[in-house]
Length: 122
Image (cartoon, rainbow, N blue to C red):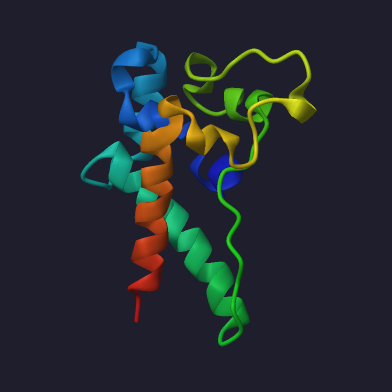
């Protein structure tokens, strides 16, 4: 969802002052129909999760949140400003590890907002 439908690093919508003006413009264009880039991110993520969950309803669906390697996050708009350069991507900061790191706490909250929105859908 994040890579193919959103295309923006979650921290780029949260901390626009830390990305380039060109990246801010790309994000502004993508989020032009939403109140804010954060709302765009949450809406797009929740829509994607909901569409997959609907296809399997009434069976439960396991949602796997942002589990990219740092090089994959770097490819997202604004991503190069927030990711660590890792020698070995397979043993680096991935899986649940980023969510334990203070730099990624706010992006986890974005993903949780999307999950809550999906849970509250009728």
